[in-house]
Length: 281
Image (cartoon, rainbow, N blue to C red):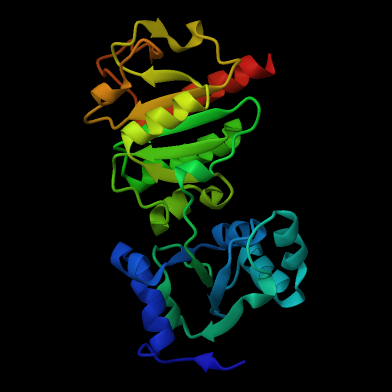
């Protein structure tokens, strides 16, 4: 296996451009920085085209597992069982020096493996819901940390999908991938405009709960034991007027201090786990 040592290597330069959204949009590819995140992408059947690894930095169990499973072909069966993309043996392994790896890595947590994968965004009409779905809708939420945390909550509470409305949401921002711990690859996600999303939710027969500071009902006073969509807005602007209507129930969380709202990811966690609590009961 040849060692890439030059920072001017064309393959490396193309991969480094994926740190920015413009590069991702132009190439139709994404950068997966983080061993656990990369392993989850591979096991979910995401088509990972290239993995760059640095021998001096591979120290975690997950990083070692990425290399071991790619080399052994064990991920083929896992990807096939997940119904995902191409076999993991399509992935090309490239060894790089620490300096080259630093050019590719996004954050401070260098774990010795970085992947380049195909971007395969879902459209709204491609979402398939289970019999008793919980769908999380976020409107105007763009901070990568919040989006990643909401994805982790959706994954933990067993939500069926997460839809982002009316924001320039980039689900494959490396910080979203990191904050989600790679669940962005296992949780169905898509982006759509608010009117389109609202129409889709109604056609799916979902009861719609809109989280509002002035909501007339507490979140525990409504039934989550039916197909439900819960809608949350950005902390700065809240939800748009689209989310008012006879078939939309405004719900609230009690705020006993001086603050009038929680961080949107904390609100999502409270509401999703109330749905899980009621359904489990």
